[in-house]
Amino acid sequence: MIEVRMTDKELILNFINQYDLLFNAELIAKLTSVSREAIEKLLPDLLQSQAIKQIEDSPPIYVRVNRYQARIGYQHYKGWTFSIADAHKLLDILEQGRYKSIRDIAQAIGKSRQWVYIYLEALASIEVVDLRQHIYVVISRQNVPKIGRKVQKGILGQLRSLNRAGCYRLIE
Image (cartoon, rainbow, N blue to C red; front, side):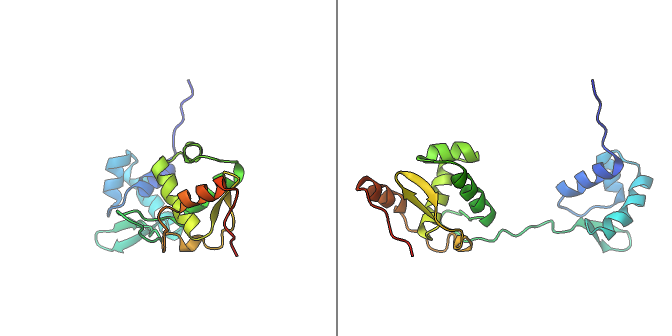
């Protein structure tokens, strides 16, 4: 059996990346089983690399830098907030395959069918995604930052109806 041990620095970085509250060397020592002396030797490196910042001098208290990452997006309904990064992941999946159903897309991206439907509806509303010959296709990524600003309810049904009639919408 191979035993893998993390270094003190790896343990401390792992702790810092998961801990959103204020901390000091003593707390790190209690929660990681790394000696306090080793922690105090590594803290200046972590400060210099901007992994943490010191917010109090006596006693020294630290926080993780960028511990609250803002999600840029617009609410659609019932608390749904769209992430531009998630939208790009969905578009990457659509570009890699020929998907005809929301179920297949959900399986490929590892999200719920509801999530995929709402994102597709938002992306179709801003003319990023379209349905051509019953296959979801990416038209352009230019409008992705506008996701969620204006969502046209039922647009996916309209696109399916157009496809059944052998038509598709013209996008400029």
